[in-house]
Image 1 (tube, helix red, strand yellow):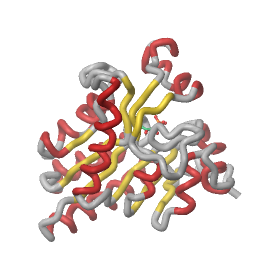
Image 2 (image 1 turned 180 degrees about the vertical axis):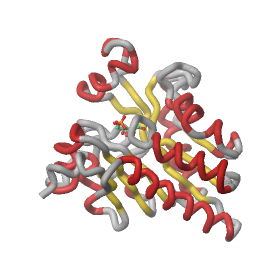
Image 3 (image 1 turned 135 degrees about the horizontal axis):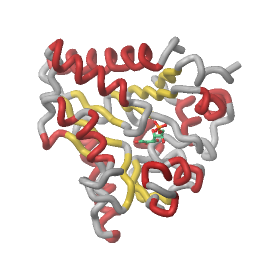
Length: 244
Ligand code: F6R
């Protein structure tokens, strides 16, 4: 638990930078799992700062984002491709071929094979070194809504009503929020060597309590992280307020 989201984000960014430097020094690729939304933006700001001021290079980094709305074109306002470009990729030296965000433009019948290929690509690179996560009001990580099983993998999912309500302002009305998304699964996330889940603000406190101290259940996907060998929950004091 950190006194503020700003300080907490710096600590998460430092851990990511450490991994990148260590692996790059060995000539290895760092494989990162990334999230969108309001939670990780200060981590990305700090990584950009380290790139500009400290020479942190992303040439040996490959990234996989958790999710994307479906359907969604990459240049649309709410696209997670656009989000990642604006908040990170366009400001660092990561090669264009090294970042991956699920493709929201595919015809429906190609999605199944595409998701299997996304999984394979992660595996072929040796797996995710660090997966960073935010958490939604439904307890989702990625878009693993209630009902997502422990062994779920990258797939198309139907978004929960609560998640669509929370996204309504981004889409200028709930009716415009896509009903579907492509998301990494719980098992995809659990296979990462390290997981860092972040949450800021009092609005997240009840969900954090259920995820961290509640029973491990498909009703709260984040609760599965209790069974991960190396998962860290990084909070500000407000998000930690309901923990006993
Ligand atoms: C985003 C994602 C979601 C968000 C979660 C919290 O890629 O996978 O699980 O992390 O909905 O969103 P924010 O950070 O906007 O509160």
